[in-house]
Length: 95
Image (tube, rainbow, N blue to C red; front, side, top):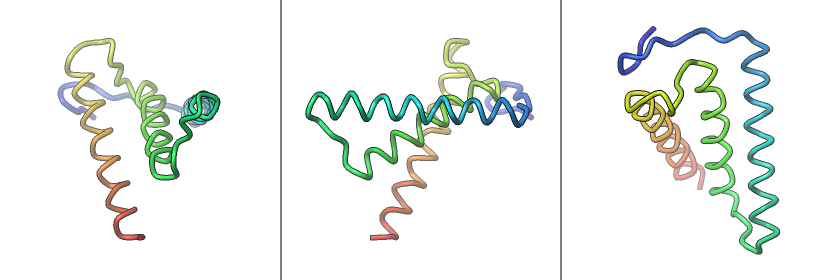
């Protein structure tokens, strides 16, 4: 499968699990740093940060690495934008 001319790979279950755990760990670290600096995130912002961090970690396992050029960067930004738009739409419908 290709996206923006990037051939994607199929990660194993263990790779996806490890990437998800890493994304959640990074999210927890960001929450801790923000809280220690006195700038805690509200629920919507924290959820958006979680979504983008987990996507970033899983995207690398799929073969989308932003350090490999502009196509990879555009693909990562496009998927992140779609995920955030869906997330904001869900929040708008919920409340």
